[in-house]
Image 1 (cartoon, rainbow, N blue to C red):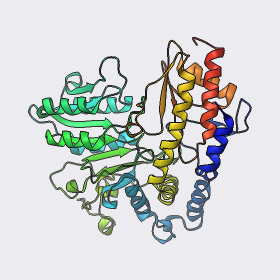
Image 2: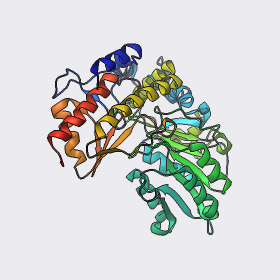
Image 3: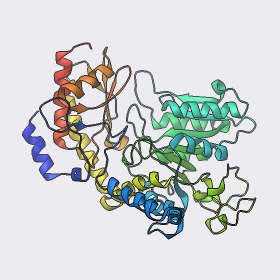
Image 4: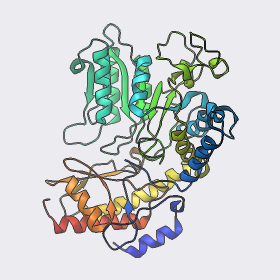
Length: 425
């Protein structure tokens, strides 16, 4: 594996690393960490702190008047985020809102869209769904007086395979769709990095008469999305992974416009989901707008909105199409390096090899070993931060905004050296 080739590729395809704070290495021969955990927490953009300081200054100078009289009036702060966020997910600004956190938003959406009736009660998820999604749908089934073990259907890959096939998902919906109330899958699977065919599955679910929603935590900022055109009913996502908005950052929500303003759609309500023009009339009955803003419940945490706004404006300036093209190049380079590493070691790639079926994450299985221990050694012996999922998966995410080809080279060299030095561990 030629290090010189990595430097040549970086010179030709540099990305936007200069826009982010980089981590100093705690081990290895390089001053900076090779960071591959952006699928858990993205690096901090350099613009975040100065922009956040502006909001802090507004608070210190005019206090409560900031809701109406600041350069960015807090009552309309979420509107500054709606446009670029909508462009990022392929939606209309009226269909998106930033609020709460991911699982909270999924619950609020399921209040509206999981409406079991008669035999149509099932919720379809993937067996390797992120645990929070699994807990959420099971609790929703119990809330409706249903047995979650009977109600929640977990679709599994074929024997000997790691990822779900689109045709198996659509075949299930064609055969059992009259019993399905809700399809709720991850757009990009957190464990394997598989990109599900969102438009195909959405079409199949809706043809079966089910509501189709998506958890896009690992998809937003990673792959291009067109939620409106794909006819998705609803979606939710976090912003602290590929969107780099900070630990525990506010989340996003999408509701297709055909549902907006529907008076028969149940929804939990609060003051902030009231129409802004009448909010301060303090009326006892809510008058929600015919937009996704109607799903807001509580006042927005303004100091948490700033990092999200900074992030989506960065994506707006760089453009998702350009990032996707670089992602394919960068991830393909890492894949070729990993092929050399895994050829004669107890390592195997579980992420689909077709670039159209994955984002920037590549998941590697360590046969008979501990992923957590391997991840620890990569960090402290080589300055490579990867992400482990026990018992045996290492996740490497070369993020196109800030990762480099040389980072990928370092990861492959470190992985080989660590496995060779500590076989079976």
